Amino acid sequence: MQPILDQIVKAKQLEVAQIKQHIGLDDVKARALDQPPPRNFFVAVTRPKGQLHVIAEIKKASPSAGLIRSDFDLVTIAHAYHENGAAAISCLTDKTYFQGRLEYIEQIRKAVPLPVLRKDFLIDPYQIYEARAAGADAVLLIAECLSEARLIDMLILATELKMTTLVEVHDVENLLKVRPHIGFPHPGYMMLGINNRDLKTMTADVTHTLRLVNMVDDTHILVSESGITTPHDIRKLRKAGINCILIGEHLMRQPDVGAALRELTAGT
Image (cartoon, rainbow, N blue to C red; front, side, top):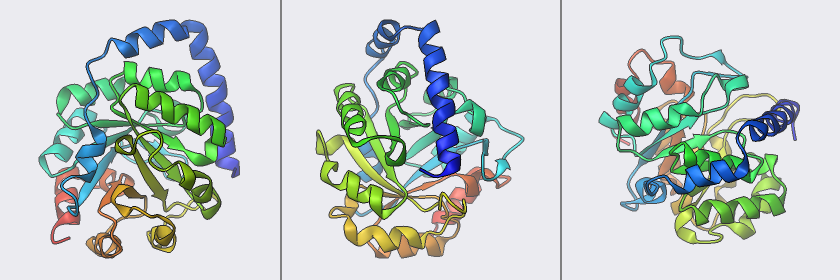
């Protein structure tokens, strides 16, 4: 685990311990189970098969970029994504490093009909119940943050709650760790993400996905994340059989996020 990720995970462990003292597991479970059924994130980003699907991200800041967008109106951004072809929305909920909030999930879900992914550093099953209680339809699980046993436990729990999981890897080692569990425990609930950001340099290069794609048997469930900034990037990925992409920082830096999404995907 690289230093910045190690730092984030340690902070998250403390944060989760503190939250549990205020809201017990039984309470957050009850709230999660009381929610309406999740929207089907998996179907939204995989069907029709062969079509481009964009998971558009709402992200105010990041450790590598600092403040990305000062005029941050997430409902306006969510509407712009929906109106310009996004298949789903990813929302950062980490407060400390990304200036996110868990409450953003509910606000987005009320504003648009798209399924919403909670993007955070999930290290404890409690956070999956917490995500469902907030209205999230899907959760991100980062392989670098989880032991294999914990990853399996969280995959099972998310599926029991009818949520889609996006299991993210950054390197070959973690892709090998995740590969035996692709499609577990049910193939209609799990996506595999390759993050193009190098955790050592914090730079992103879309060709990272292209280097690893041959290690993935089913590109239908593969998501390329980070570093996608041009239509050419998208065409390269689609030529390799990758039709689902997650785009965040590039869109959030544009004055008109909807126009930026439309222009980025035009002709791809």
